[in-house]
View (tube, rainbow, N blue to C red):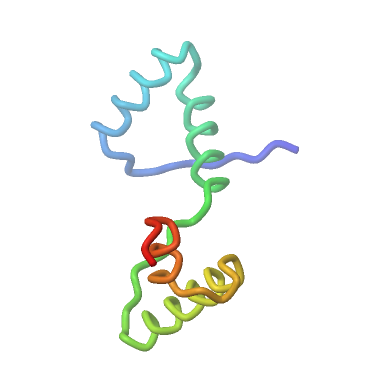
Length: 87
């Protein structure tokens, strides 16, 4: 299936950089743009920073739960004491 995408009002500097990048990869600007778009939509999304204290608490609780599952319910302090060999 063939799809056409038209990009209007592309900044001249961006166009120039795309042309140079395509040339360095020995491909057309169109092929380079396809590759860039494909990588961008397939890479994992970055997680936005928490916006509220409540959101931060929920995220920390999720991490804490994952850690406890992997550490047999031990706290970070307990694990660090064990790793250091503290009595």
